[in-house]
Amino acid sequence: MPTQPFTGRVQLPVLIIAAVFLVVVMPTLNAFGIIENFTLNLWGKYLCYGIMAISIDLLWGYTGLLCLGQALFFTLGGYMMGMHLMLMIGKLGQYKSDLPDFMVFLGHTEIPAFWQPFYSFPFAIAMVFLVPGLLAYIFGYLAFRSRIKGVYFSILTQALTYGMALLFFKNDLLMGGNNGFTDFRTLLGADLRTASTQRILYICTAVLMVAVVAGCKWLTNSRFGLIQRAIRDSENRVLFSGYATANFKLFIFVTSAMIAAFAGALYVPQVGIINPSEMTTEKSLEAVVWVALGGRGTLVGPVVGAISVNALKSWATRAYPDLWVLILGGTFVLIVMFMPKGLVGIPSQIQELITKIRRKTPQADPLPPAISSETADP
Amino acid sequence: MSQKPFLLAAEGLSKSFDGFKAINDLNFYLDEGELRTVIGPNGAGKTTFLDIITGRTQPDEGTLMWDDSKHDLLKLNEYEIYRLGIGRKFQTPTVYNDHSVTENLILSLAGSRGIWHSLFGKITSGQRDRIAEILTTIKLADHAHRKAGVLAHGQKQWLEIGMLLAQEARLLLVDEPAAGMTDEETYRTGELLLSLAGKHTIVVIEHDMTFVRQISQGRKVTVLHQGHVLCEGPVDKVQADERVIEVYLGRKSKAA
Image 1 (cartoon, rainbow over the protein chains, first blue to last red):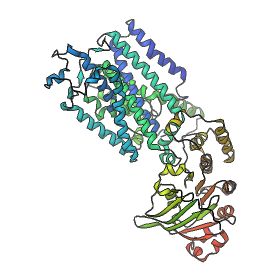
Image 2 (image 1 turned 60 degrees about the horizontal axis):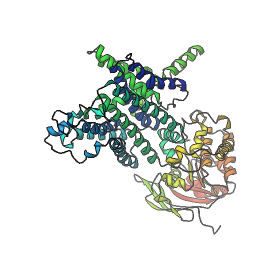
Image 3 (image 1 turned 135 degrees about the vertical axis):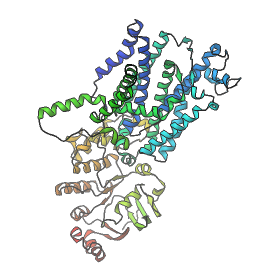
Image 4 (image 1 turned 180 degrees about the horizontal axis):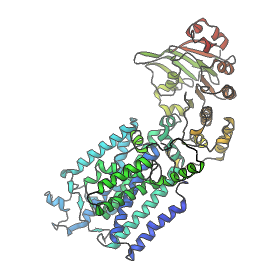
């Protein structure tokens, strides 16, 4: 189903109010003790997920590439940040060693060479972009040059994610094995366990989110955006209009991998742990569900989807520990069946309903089931 | 006829699909500025021939040279061939349904096809004028901001021709432009193609003989049969040719 960009659907003033609320109002309320630290921290996590969801939609909703490995790039970004954070623990760890605890546990006496540069924060940040970006470039280059499309592309991204997760579970990789990294202490000298540091991290995340939405809005409204959607709808025609579609797909694939990686890098110091279970295929699929529920082919939809699904999950696991899976699953089914345009499509759906009632003319049902057909033919 | 070099020269082209010879030892020469009509019964290999020219299909044998043998088209891919100035209108109208009519033309405008340009390049006033001009030519000025997907079938065909014009192609490959059009629309399409002849080199594939007569006007018509050129010449001569009549036997209503 072709979808429209969100221009006109969500008005600019609403977006600005939402941005001000997230970036300024929430942290201010937290500073005055009205919003709990726990809640703000939770929202920081949601926003990281929201940014990852945008990166998925940039590929899926706008370019027609259903990537089932976005959690991999997210987690890789997190690991790069995690390496820096692990080294910053210094002698404060359990074993009072300069080495991260897991290395001492594995019998190492020296910090491996590839860990050394991560003492530098700028280097770690550079790696947050470069490592996932390079992986996306190599994978994308091979896949797009061989003209791998549709479900085959999705399956390959899933295979890549699975393979990488297996690799990270191994202790020999010296990336912490299945326990990953945790017990972080400081970032740039600030104690990560204080409310003020967490508040700053939250603000960084909210600012990044606003920047990503604004940047993607610019991108999708440029001629590049036109080409992106043309590739989604009719790639052959684009090829016969003189565009090297493989290059365009590669560009957007690498860009969205880097966006996801940056979100992952902000996620880790806020959540305080990163391990390979975050990069499994289930996590990637979950993120695709957020996009589908929020509204594919829009920029606000993925954020709305990521926040609402995770908020629902947090609430349901606490309120109904026995029933939450049913609640979550039931909601998914209802939305898929009755809201093909996702949560952000509700206003236009209501509008359609009103005009339909006013006209009182019976029309054919304009709502095909969205998810089932779309995932089958991305 | 003339000593000038060919714009497009195909020699000994063959292509078979699972043993079926879609193209069989095909020789085809095209001069710059020509308006050539290609006719032939279903399965004669017309569309496969266009597929080979535009890089969609690789032939099993033969050569295909462009612009006085300066380029070997068989070594280039789809977008490289396009960039030499070869544009194609598909048999079924292939436009971007979710884009507006104007956006369809913007995507087809001649110029850089790079990523950088797509991000930061601005549409010049000259290009804007060109789009307005094309919209008038293809009679879609009133529909400029409508989505291409909601256009009528004939309008989509015109939009696709407009996209070839925006591209400023040297060679227009037009596959069954009149398919699904009313007589009136078909006639206007013919007028449009005639007005472009000379400025562009055009190859038209068509079934509709009224249309072929309208646009060929004594120009060369090529008859394909079983992937091979059966005969070439003015439409009257071709239609009188015994072999052509034989090939079209049973389909005479279409040919005559």
